[in-house]
Image 1 (tube, rainbow, N blue to C red):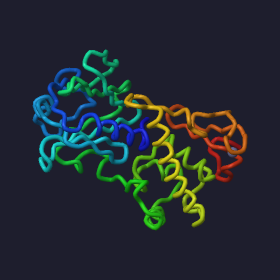
Image 2: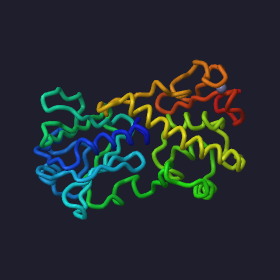
Image 3: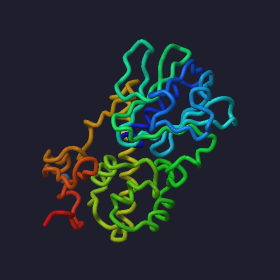
Image 4: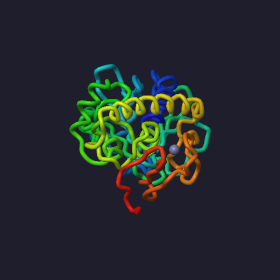
Length: 279
Ligand SMILES: [Zn+2]
């Protein structure tokens, strides 16, 4: 699942490669629409975008937002890849991935496409980003919020700290994987209640959040290049590292949960918390 660090690199690559380019053709697969491509303008995505120029690329939380036409015209494509969606940049002659749902040919002979193995992501064509589901309720960007703002906001949230981080209302763009990495960096057990955290621990969480996200962006940029459909994650300290030694203390990494909702942590470096499902 792409989270803030991957999508920040995708934004950066797209900003360099597609801004100012005209879209020469648009194909929605299957023809007439797919459940992943949603036209909130009701004008038809092919006719709205064929001949349009990409004028800006932004990231907000776990969305990539492309803007079209002259500034102020207000036509956007908001891409929320969720668990299995990926954006791909390729040459027109290259083979597309299976489960491709949207293909744009660009004026310079490159192609921008979206594929999604499980059709879980959504692409919204809209004049109003606030109308896009899950967009308006997002918290601030974690790399832009100050420590004082973070301290003030986090007081509104109860429950386990991992859930507080991943729900997106405290700060946007952190999912299951980076929450594990941030909590390991902060030496905080993922299932500790937010209300039990001391002011010093909240500050440690804030610093770990910023450091982990910034350093991950640099590592992904180095590993991804222009292959923006990849998800290089070999550098993780604990997430997906069940049983491997903790990089800080050598204790085997613990696992709780299953499938897409696993939690990995070091029970030595991240003490406390009532551990679900374990005695
Ligand atoms: Zn450890």
